[in-house]
Image (cartoon, rainbow, N blue to C red; front, top):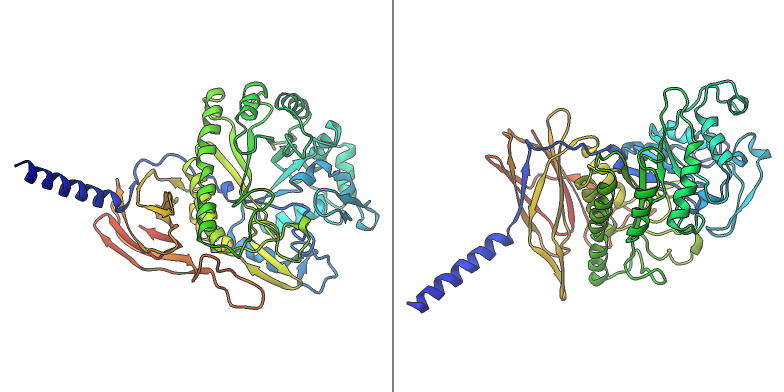
Length: 515
């Protein structure tokens, strides 16, 4: 009898393991209450390498097709992708940038040395007016990071006045003299950048005191109410977050606080190649990028302690993959290619920001053009859309949609003796009632059958779908060749009642739409 009993127990155990290994997403379509802010899908462009010059700005006299000096192809692509905001001028560059050097006739603007990025001469031909013209063409919200590190309170205060005031004043008159009669009404302002490092090497308390002083003089003009972003921590610096939330006057001196985290495959000295990597490096990148969830959880816990009413947003205004530069390029220009691995990193992080959207109100991937995990690469009059571009384009369906709580049960992607979850996903409902589900299969070798059970709503039909994948984990798009990674139609979907079965290829990101 004991023998038979043991056999039964073993069979039951194996059945339990089989069931638990199935890939299932339970979506509670009637319990959504948090909005996924479109600004989570924001971008960041610094005076670094060819991000600004050659990436956006070519000048009015360039043979590259442009409008007021700004590349038409890049603007069209970023609008296609749905760019909601753009952070500028840095980055480390922000805390050595003096805005008055970038206004007025371009031939009269003083030059400076970009000491952070390549030691090149910055001629200031792309300044405040050019940036806001870019944002106008992109139809996106400008996010300006002010100079707290080497600037003055007066300088930053006057920049806000120059951009936002319609009162009779020297700054308003100066703006009008430079050709802009109406104020721009810029809402989002960073009060310094990485003040724990390149922005001044402050201690947390010293920065909290200085930020409060600066914030006092950043004024609201007219109906425009500033959303001031304090410099928050990098990575696991929870003491910095604790100090700012405790002593920085949250909700009054600042409405958002930043967090920076880059996915580094190896270490800061040797980051690894963006294109020449094996499965070990692919797995390590997935594992390290998933550390973002722990960071979000722990920093949000601190924020909840001091801001239980959820008034202050967490602003992840620098994130993404950071690899070694491409061979033969300037080490200070941070130019790297972009593969299917980058697409997977983008989808995983966007899913995490969506998941924690109660607190995460903006994020800005670094950087939009020609730098780090870029959306666009340019070379003279040519342009390439990267795999990351297609993820951001696919995820447009989540902009300002209602997050639908989802429970994911999945098997693991295991490499050697370590494992990470195979699946990452987001479900949301837009204003028209359509439900969109994005799912990533991180396993580079094995397809997955994923069952999505929708509770709390009746699903009438699967309406459309799309997929991003490639032949290899290091497939990438480059100049002068056919795209290896793009977004294409996807219909490997079956509906039965309120259960959707998605047959996902290995190393893929899929979007399905239901109504």
